Image (cartoon, rainbow, N blue to C red; front, side, top):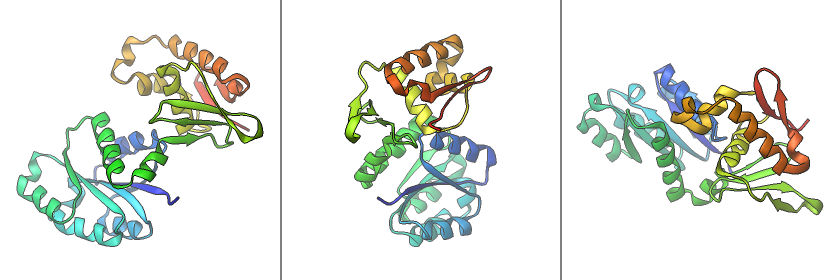
Length: 237
C-alpha cells in the first residue's frame, strides 16, 4: 500500500505546529511547507496525499496555487482553511479551481480532524481504513480505531483480542502506539485523552489507567515503561 502523506501548507508557524501536533498524534506521516513551490515539488513525488492549506500561504490568488498543487499529482486533495478576510469570491475561485473543500479558520481542531477523516473515507476508503489500524514497531500490539478493538500477538502469529478494555484504556493504548518510544508526560496524556476536561482530572488518574491497561495486556504490559518523575513510554527494546 502506498503511504498517504499529509501536508500542512501555512506561513503561520504557530498554526502549522498546532496542526502538525494534531496529525502526528494520529500516527500520520506529516510534512510542513511554507512555500507553494516547495509544496508542489514535494507533492509531485507522492502518489496519494492531502494538503491542509492555510489562506495565508495561498493568497492573493488561491486558485492559481490550487491548480499548481493539483497538477503535481492526481491523487492529492486540497482543503483550504480561510477566514472571513479571504472573501467569498476568493474561496469560490479556489473551489472552482479544484480545491476539494474549505473550512473556516476558527474551526475546532477535533471537528477539523473528523472532517479530514470523512473526506478520506469518501475518496480513498481502503487507505483511510488502513490509517485506523496501528501496530507497535515490534508487531506485538495492534489496534483498529474505527472498531475500537485491540489485539496482542498470540501463538503461531495469530492475534488475540484484548477483552474488557474501557474507552479510556483504549485511548491510552492508541496514544502510546501513535508515539512509539517517546516519553509522554502525564500532563500531555491528560490533555490528549481528556482534552477540554483535563483540568477536572486528577494526575493520579493517569497512573491508575496505565496500571489497569498493563494488566489487560498480560505479558505485554511491561512494554509500557514508567519514566519516573515524568510519565510513560511504549518501548519494545
